[in-house]
Length: 124
Image 1 (tube, rainbow, N blue to C red):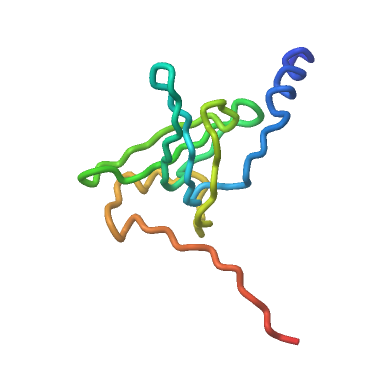
Image 2 (image 1 turned 90 degrees about the vertical axis):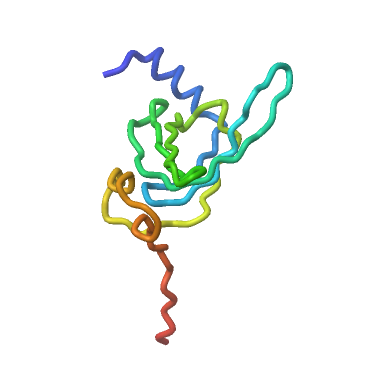
């Protein structure tokens, strides 16, 4: 049971934030706001979401991408962070687990995730 002042503060943090619906297995492109001195720029980080945890303001998600020389790079982002400029869902993955930590041990084709396709019903 939370204090009502904390609940009101968290509700005000969530207002005005439009976050797309995604889950583990989806491929995301994140626009991260980076400040260098007095200049700011947006850098894209594209990878597979391997975990979503928490709820409300405390919700975080982990994105994994393959960097240079096939080195895996994972970053954990707070969902309602001010440094996240945009979240774009590129592909919806068909997975059977909520946490895809097994992808850490996979390389190349073994690390692929099938894409979820919407089947069209032509029966009339």
